[in-house]
Length: 325
Image (cartoon, rainbow, N blue to C red):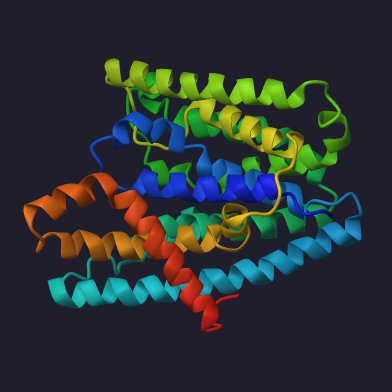
C-alpha cells in the first residue's frame, strides 16, 4: 500500500493535541474540547490500516500488532512504575499499591503507574477481542454494537450529569469497551467501504467543512454544559466522534502531500510522543518551581511546545541508541 502522508500528518497533529490536553496552560480551557478527538483519531487510523478484506491477512495484521503493542505495554508500564516508585520513596506514599488499583488496571485499563497508559492497555484489549471475534465470525455483530458503545460512553460519560444527575466514574467508560472497540471498529468500516466512501464527489470539501463544523459544535457543547453546570469529567463530547471521523476521511480523501519532516514524525514518533511526554511534564513542573518568575511565566504559556520538542528529541536519541525502533 502506498504511504499516506496525510495520515502521518494527522497522527502527528493528534500527538500534539494530546500534549495540549495534558498541559495546564492559561488557554487550555479554550481548546480542550478540540483536543478530545485525538485518541479517537488514533484508534480509527489503527482500525483502518489493520483491517483487510482478506481474512488471513487481517488476522496476521492483528497478531503482529498484538505482539508489538504487548511489548510496548510491558516496557511503558515498567518505565512509569519505576518513576512512580521514585516519587513514592521521596514522598513516603505507597497508596497506589492496593487491590482496588490493580482491579481497575485489569478491568478498566486504568494503569496505576501512568494515567495516560490506559490507552495502550485499551488498544491491546481491543486487538485481542477483535482477533477473537474474527476467529469466531462475530465481527458483523461487533459492527452493530459500535453505536451502542458510543452512546454508552456519552450517557455514562460526558452527559451523565444531564441524564442521571450524578457523575459515573469516568474509568467505567474510558476503556477498551467504550473507547477502544467502537473507534477501532469505525476505522475497520471505513476501510471496508473505502472504495465507496472515497468515491464520493467533493468528499475533501465535505469533510473539511465537517471538521470546521464539528470543531464549533464541540466548543458549543462545552460552553453549554459548563453554563448549566453539567459538564461531567469525561473526555468525549457527541461532536468528538464526528470531528474525528471528519479528520480521518479528509486525510484519506484530500490530495496527498509529499513526505516531509512532520509526516515522518507522525509515522515514527507519534506513539512515542504520547508515551514519553508525561515524563517531561513531571520534570519541568518540578524544575520550574526553582526558576525565576519570568521563566515560570514563560513556561506557563509555552510548556506544550517545550515538552513536545524535548519529547521528540528524547525519542530520536533512543532510536539512535537502538533502544526503540
